[in-house]
Image (tube, rainbow, N blue to C red; front, side, top):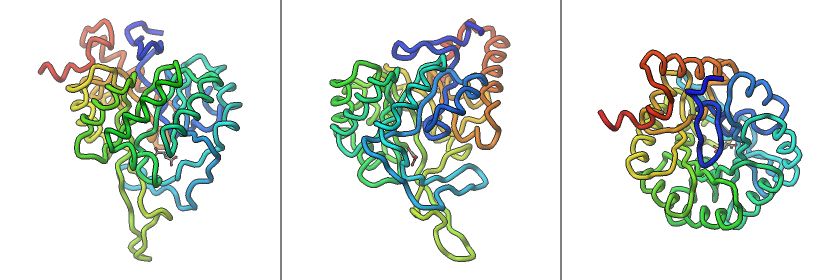
Length: 304
Ligand code: SIN
């Protein structure tokens, strides 16, 4: 593996900047071996709560010309059952970061504690799901509440705590500052953008939940802008996420200020080989531009 791509985020050693984003394939350990073989340097699991949750009724996903709108509704087996999957995931030789949601600071913390006990290398707090009431973005858009959740989780776990922020807010940098002050070790930006689609034949919203979260290429420029704004205000590492489908997208995020990136929706369109393509592409870019390390280009767009 090429050393120019090695990096560290909050003490986690990564072989390259391309991580698997939460929400795609992270509910069971089985398919992840191939994702890691393809080059993913860390796994972020699907969001897990304290109790099992069925999620929304179908349709829960709709494809648009520029991405996917999902309103899965946070389906998951609950942390007590998910623990056995964490044990399995630990056999992969990359950091396992468990995404956690909750309906109160205590619930976030209780779930995080159980995940860490099972072996999670870090926790990513989902303060940004845009389509489930009383959690995600509904609490994560509020800097005070977001800070309270981060503080509580940081009191209870010793692993690094990442916070995934919502773009569905007037000032994402304000949120970033609040969670950094509360002790967050890194920021993931961004989660999906609240969206909807309507069937013109039936004149009805397509998703059973009516609203969902848009991911994929359509949101990439929004995500790059968010990373750029956050980088100007915080010192903790930023992990860019949103519409990354090729190495150029990944490099754009890194130049905006991301130390690493997460890839999700692109797997649905391009297959798991997307990790190999992105990692190879970043490596060739660094060679062509004569940089010794990817770390050298983090936030470079701010100097120009
Ligand atoms: C889901 O599982 O419902 C998606 C999670 C999210 O949007 O954060």
